[in-house]
Image (tube, rainbow, N blue to C red; front, side, top):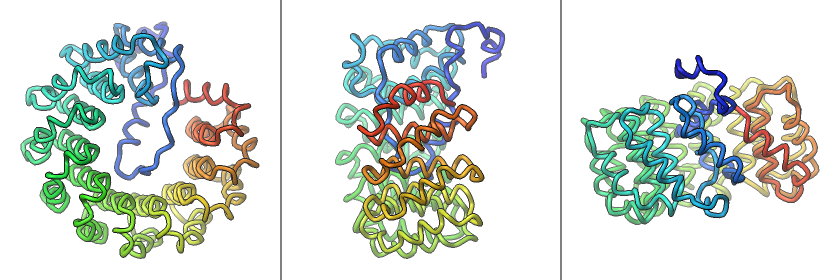
Length: 413
């Protein structure tokens, strides 16, 4: 946190939550590919954040941008009158070399999340990505932004692929380039082999290889010829755990093509000698594979219940059950019991909340219990935020708790 911010605690924007850690965690490849939908902001929330962007201290700007990027910003025109003014403000921060590099990176990410109104800046964002004199965290943010800008960024797909292939470029920038290609669909197809080669190259930094795995998973049909290679990475115990976890996540996004490897994925979930990040990735993959993972639903639930299993893995099992839908509904009461079990840590309980939020009609009898977690201020904010996300996914049944959901989303973390 900025030293200036510590000196000026009277700033009216000091209330903004410090969410950088959460933002970074959500960007990691071992986090479930099926994240809860982002909340839609109210005008007063956006106006407060935009005002904070004018604060003289970078620490306040950073916190405001972290908060901004947690919202669904694609239809900002429905919330504020001139979203193009916000895009201009963000671009001014991005190009200002006197501003903290992490703030500039956050501004780039925010532009990428704005959708249509940010398109006038796509060339300048691409120029920043290509500028080797720019700080690597800013270039990485520019890469992520381009990956979120759809059609407008397609003229720059070759530039992005060149960044990924350039071994002289910082690993965080190359990882951002991999992410961008994974989001660019048809335009990235000519570079699928390059991405697969990066994944298989043991001389490449693990964060870049993990990003390549995630990209292949996101490219779907075009990446299916490489499904065996991805599975081999998952099975190779000499490979860094973050890369193997990314490979598991990729398989989870490849549907029927991954069917021959479902048992392998499950075997990694149940192997207690395997790194917890890889096991979490395996759980997430099973949750994303739908029909082909149904034979393992009971065993996934058994992992959730098993107190000898790492809490991180158990939280992944909870998320997987929520993503498997109909076949997990027989376990809804037990999942609710886990949410209410005060002897369990916040990650397992939050995973249970997420699962309930994804189980729809079957979870409605437990809406009040989820709301009680949300309203209990003695509980950890991470758990309460998980409860808020669950209620947000339960639609009509959660309407009596709309105000509480908005409050925790505004001030948690």
